[in-house]
Image 1 (cartoon, helix red, strand yellow):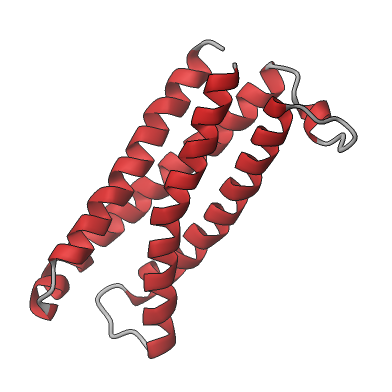
Image 2: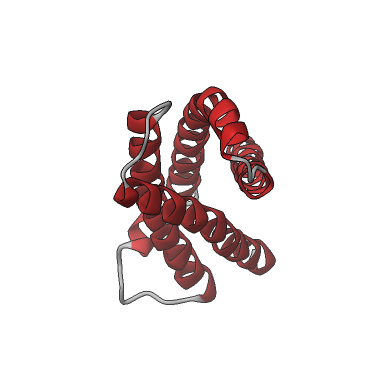
Length: 149
């Protein structure tokens, strides 16, 4: 698998670790004043980091799929095996997580340092929680794939 798997793992560790850190930060900062001091400064930095890492994850994932000759098999829905089915599931979850991340980042960047509407607050918190939970589900499928291989 070469360098692709190493970059993919480093990016996954960064993505999940950052998500856990932001989750813990969000839970521990109860005081509204503290949140107003921290999030406008950390949020954009983490947002750009998140975009770069997600791009790295997706690109190295595609690279490994192509390099291992899996691209044709993935789109041939008559083919089923433990590896193919687990990889398809993982890719669907990654697509969902990417959409959730785009929603979250769009709201976060647009409202940074500003008061959010009730809908923006709900969508931001829900997408943040969705990203946090989806990380562990995607990680589960990564472990399943690794165990099979």
